[in-house]
Length: 153
Image 1: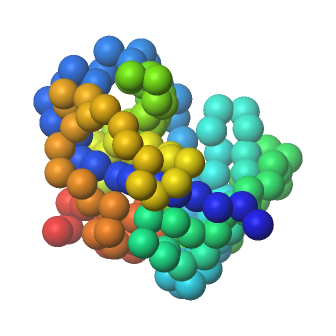
Image 2: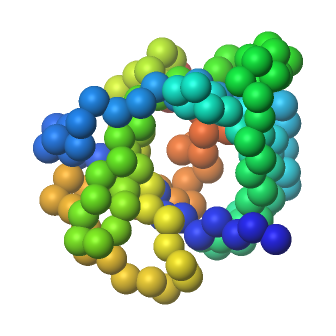
């Protein structure tokens, strides 16, 4: 079984933009049930189908499979609700890789940083641009942003 252990934080200021131009991501949800989300994601010329289980603290089951790009485009058309679109920058800091997502469309104005860990208690150095932790706040789950966009909060 795949396992994702992730912490999520709001991002402050603009210093994080030093990470380069980033890459556009478009994703949609075939299922947004908290017990099992099923996501289709296109990033550049690559695509994946991802199935995630219910959060158990900071961890949850995660299974990810590559898809042919044309299949992913057709699957996106079957997804529930609007797509979540964002620019992702990968930023190395103190030996760790951060994924910083700048959301677009109805989620514009929201910038979130995520770090994947080897175990829930793993320590890491916080970049200066890191704000409040929102790992346990379901409003910030991408599956929820598709149904309840940031601009409507």
